[in-house]
Length: 318
Image 1: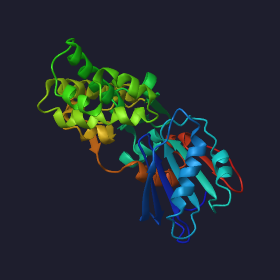
Image 2: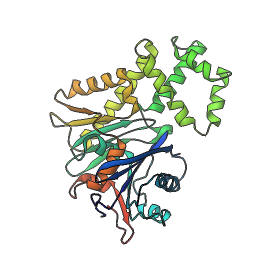
Image 3: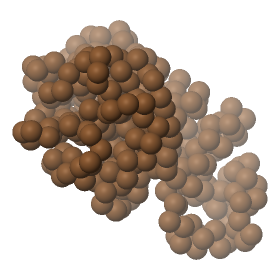
Image 4: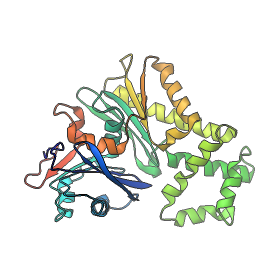
């Protein structure tokens, strides 16, 4: 592996989400530059999008970049890091570390510790890590998964707004908010179906729910339902890796969904109801921190199996 601590080397860290892609350059662990780009579309091939994002990010690089450490939403477990390295020919990058963003979120939140981390942004995914195995829970996309995510919350907000409009549900301030965004509320579904960026657009309503949760009962219920789903995913992950038997498992929470204080407080309370001595970690690090920490994962860590690696000279994966 190229040594990320080499004083002559720079690591490009890329955190690719469905709403935004963030790029950061680090030398000896120190951040020396950052930039932001459009998010990835998970219903389209990811590697070409990542290659484009890396090349765009390199324009801001100060000197040679040796390693690209990438965490991405929607990545399959058998993604080929060597294929991406080929796409980056001519950039000077000699090594690619590629992982699902559940891995980089985990590393960013609690490092190489055992436990579970739930990442809830536009999508949601939980990763649990035990002594010898890992378990991914959810992260199955907006169509069949991502329970408790920003998209899930945003879709619930639109659903409750339409229920109120129809007279099927309780009155909510959401209806007026949604009405302002569409010329005809009853044609909103047609506009959303045709929108290429509908996932991030719908997820945007999660912020409205967070802002109204303290005063609007419908928004409060949505927030609490999302928290319950995210906590349930954590419990499932801990059980699968043998950490649920511990009195004090470590649990991390990252992502914009946790800016909703009603959701965040409910999430922690549900966990503590079953695990009173839980070590709850919030805000220690983010996905970019996790991308960099991929370069430092211990050889005996169960997380190694979740990182796809390729080098310019020899391209094994682990």
